[in-house]
Length: 481
Image (cartoon, rainbow, N blue to C red; front, side):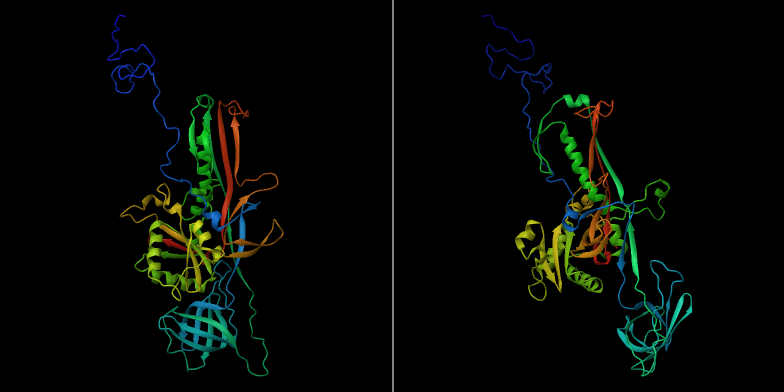
């Protein structure tokens, strides 16, 4: 048989279909043999999960609930304090006290409801002194100033108290009347409340693929965060678009801001924003700056003292970034069980296994139970964890304390009183349309024939807002003052 000389480089044709080191076409080394491809490259079908579970939602599912609403605005009312107390009180003379009033009703409306013959405690926070006094007269000097004339029980006057403007605090602890007197001087106190509101925003997302691209099949083996596993064709991208949109549903109501200040968004019709979790706690809740392990216990005890002045919800959940979580661990490492602290799992039927399965660890300090877990949203490099590297301050938000209690409110849709978590989502819905999580397909590809567009478009939509009730019981941990 004649020897066939290779035509291209060092290729030597073989008489049989067998793999030899000199009869294959190399299409990657630039040797001139890249005009054809005899063997397909070895391709791994399975995706490598280089970032693990990439989804961020789940926070609101653990601490809240979702309920329908039918209006453009959700309005709720919160109780004011039961007892009568005033801050920023001035000792005008040694026998008179004054404090400012509001001329018109508003969110910070202050009126004089102290009556003659009532008894007060006057506190001087700067020195820690207090003095019990009897009210001999209570009147409004003007529309914006109240004057209370008093006589102390244990001193000739109030000379010992600070005369600095606005330095004193007072509260009513009772009253005392002589025999045979009337109650004509008693002022009737009408209970007041504070009203809050929020508005839903419309959130949209879309995935599109042309008809031509759907014909080029390329299978990919996947195990997605929503539980899907197996092989996906071009709809793999649709699956990830859905997952991203579901994260947006939570992120939008956590980060949401109302249009205010110098923003020019007010000139854009229909763009009004929504009050998210962080904005609500910064506006109506408590903020702790720069919590660290070094001063952890002192800082944390200041939280407890503040919670005592608020609703004193016994069980609370802490959602923290990595550094703050480690600071808590360092703080707890120095505590022993018993009076100083110890473990607690009451929220989880006192089962440590149940708490740990949900990612929580529990501890008790004072009369409060706390359940701590990492919040992935604050650690992920594509969200709030973007600046959590070495030598960086962080995202500005280190964590949040959420009370585990509920409040009783009247639901106009159900027509009855129901118990709701302090933190819950309201979404637009009616008998005709449910906008909690809508998805639909348009175009002329993939079995949908709604237009002449040579593509398949998958649409996602939701309309929702977050209700943060009793924000005075929430604590936001921030990285800067």
